[in-house]
Length: 290
Image 1 (cartoon, rainbow, N blue to C red):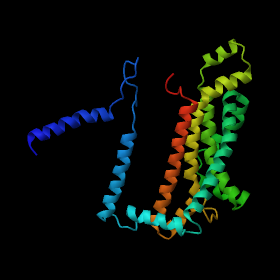
Image 2 (cartoon, one colour; image 1 turned 180 degrees about the horizontal axis):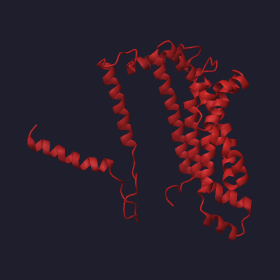
Image 3 (cartoon, rainbow, N blue to C red; image 1 turned 90 degrees about the vertical axis):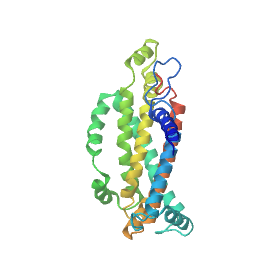
């Protein structure tokens, strides 16, 4: 490569890299670009492709034995086998459905309990005094620590699995709802009262709308905790479920099944997070703009 060609390539990279990792362009009326402004889809796609190529290259060169890290083709072939023939007592669809029922059943149960409790904790000192100690007490405790107690109290059925996931989801959703209420501007509340609004109207039209960004963030965090708790919940005599499938695969050193299960859980969680981002843009379009 000639010095001229090398210099041209270097010049292009010198211009492209600052644009790629620098701040986004300023909006009309802004003096400077906002932090994090601009799209990142292309960068995310490039990162995903790079990670896949790294995985492929490491396994192709046999830098890691297949027992510990199988090739992408082996994982995909195992995926097709489990879709049609099954593994550990069920097909992939059956395992996935069992886990979805547990995770989203606990999630929706937390939505109808944690969010109202969090809101009332933010607006009422009595409710805050009642619920804050138990939530803050159990929140840092890993689910595996109280799993035996749940089994003693509720047995080894579906109830125990859903309760374990529910407890993991409940705390972040309640605390985020409380933080959202506390973040509402007092000037907005006073303005509503000055225009004749009642307490219920202020709660519904001012406080809840002002807290909605934090509530949605709590829902996104909560569902993430739910998926991370799934494997622990499905340790309790679960015949079907993605966590149970991963656990059975690890017991018999079937690494490709374990990786495939992890990929499926990650894909489902990521799709739900994309849905929550869309819901956030629809419900709180003003977020980050005021």
